Image (tube, rainbow, N blue to C red):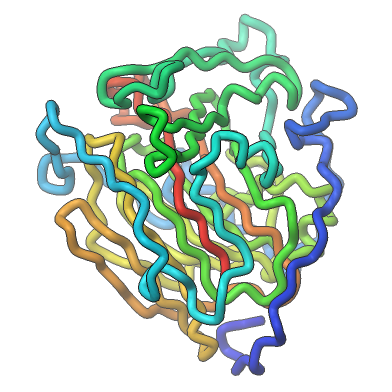
Length: 368
């Protein structure tokens, strides 16, 4: 429903049964290799041409400098442990879904996941595909500032399982969380989503690191309208504004105006709907710390505005109420690791940044 229209009172929330996995889900891929060829959609709004060549949808990629980067003490990385489920962290009106990854098995049991865009593992070696890189945490889930693991992708959905992995550092369930780690040459999205659909979502909250990952990586949380999900066979790698030109860098999974969400890019936090950015929370910063995870929330005020909140490395929480709304009706809630040639766009040098910056850390997901 458009921000310009007053909302009716939300109907009683209900959880809809799980939809069937798509071809791109790693839990099942009928052809096990070739990327899905999607029919051309007929969105009501013309897609915005992609800016060339920049991953930022509306403005040039901001430079990274000491002025906008917070550097922690290297020997004492901070881990933000799980917050208590108090009135400040539980969405008002009750929860429809909550996951804290205290069990390493929770991800496989409760989430679908997929890979959208071209499949680099099917390219000839002469095309220079990136098929292996280092992600945060070793196999024992050691300190992500000091340890890493090799991630290798293969052809098809089954070959992308390694980009998603859960960790319980020190075996402590209170520190359990999920990683996504991707490095590609073109545009790809690794995504995961609770298996069920949700009706009339009013709030989504999650924890995420604010590590500086350069100009070619960002994260999104997208509420995908059921009609859009059905149109693309439940490939949920929907692109936001700036990457919706089918001839530009894109997954070719283009949302209609019924789909919208949030984008996290180099500390910035903005909300969009269809092909328009409707508002943003300014003053964001990044950090070199990989372990710390910070609370993010987007709340629909049901009056044509959304309140964005973001915990920050200085210990404060920034908030802003901006124009926009969260999609009404049945939606899939999708968490995305978006990549547009991260090595090339890290700092303009076309080479990887320091200490392998390819990993997002996710925790404490709440949908209400």
